[in-house]
Image 1 (cartoon, rainbow, N blue to C red):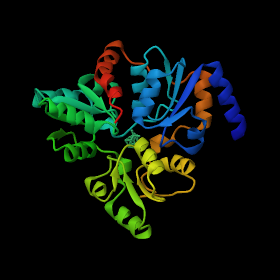
Image 2: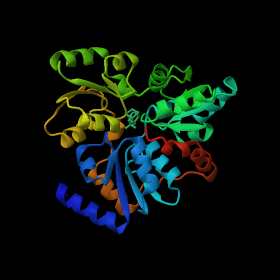
Image 3: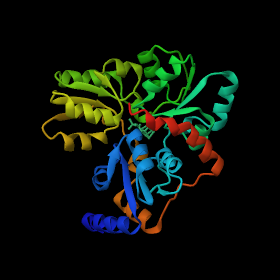
Length: 305
Ligand code: 13P
Ligand code: SF4
């Protein structure tokens, strides 16, 4: 099927299924272009919680579709490719959190949205990279001590920025781990006028070389609002499609072409068509996990940044 027939078929099926297509900023260009909404984990969660559509087709990875299901349990949430997982989310299990709870009684357990529903069910609060700092600050302001799972780099960034002591699980994003300080220094040498935007999943050494450390959505906002005409972008290069489309007069350079997340690239137009046609693959969660995970993520949507 040609790309244009695929697109027409998806539009037809979307109407038939009363579906909305949500896509993360790292998705391939043709998927971003067909989506009703493209954004970061927080923006996608807000869309999933507020949409009137009956079906949410999620172009992202497993924990994102699960989060949509937790926020909108009455809707059908489809993930076009079941293999689209997040290696960072897989670095911690519910029993790891139970063990940590025994080691750190009285601490507030804050999990990154990049976790399974089972892990969320064991934690107190959930954040995204867009609101982690505000949530850590709020916990600390009432005397709380934080255990953060699973991303050690986001935990380190939150600790450095807020001055709070954080017990961090040693998980990380393999895609962001491929961005090295040498990559940034090389790109800075090539593009001395460029502003460096880095994601908090990058290492501390990379973050130190950045002008701004922000979530993917805030990167888009900064790129649009800043007067600078050139940017070095230290995150998964899929975001460059949106940055270039929204800012045709500005120039964007990936910090590293190596920082690809293969899981984010698994969703294709053909898989979206098939998913809508056959209603595959619906996310299912048992009632107890869903209820407990919902308690954990309830407040996440109240913190816009
Ligand atoms: P955000 O888009 O929320 O910044 O997250 C980045 C990411 O790695 C998602 O898996
Ligand atoms: Fe997970 Fe990293 Fe891929 Fe995001 S970019 S889905 S954190 S592996």
